[in-house]
Length: 107
Image (cartoon, rainbow, N blue to C red; front, side):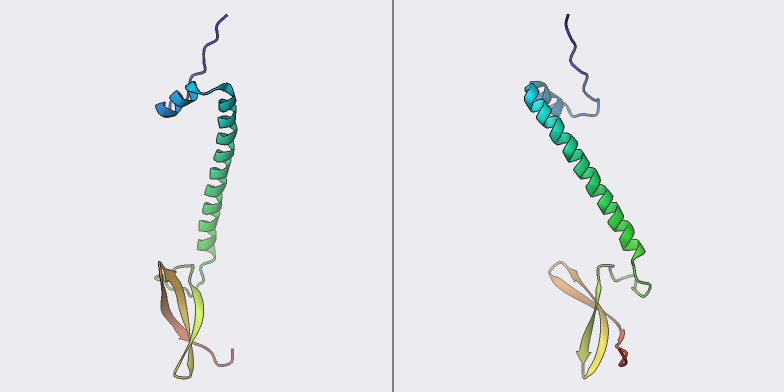
């Protein structure tokens, strides 16, 4: 009685199919275990990225200007004995600031 090898998925690249066909049964079991774990990892990363994107949209402050990224923080600068709020964020190696308004002296 002869058994036919399984048919690989049509979307699997030929190079991978050829490599798997040359592998030992032990290596194939290791590959299967690794592939399952890697698939779960990538799916989890995609979910976390999607959740982070959704969170960024939901948490965008109402007073944040359109040209200021959501990662910006508010800092206080003192100029000529007056204090001012600035949005501040990093762009590559530099820090960018945008004026927000004066600090209320009662704060």
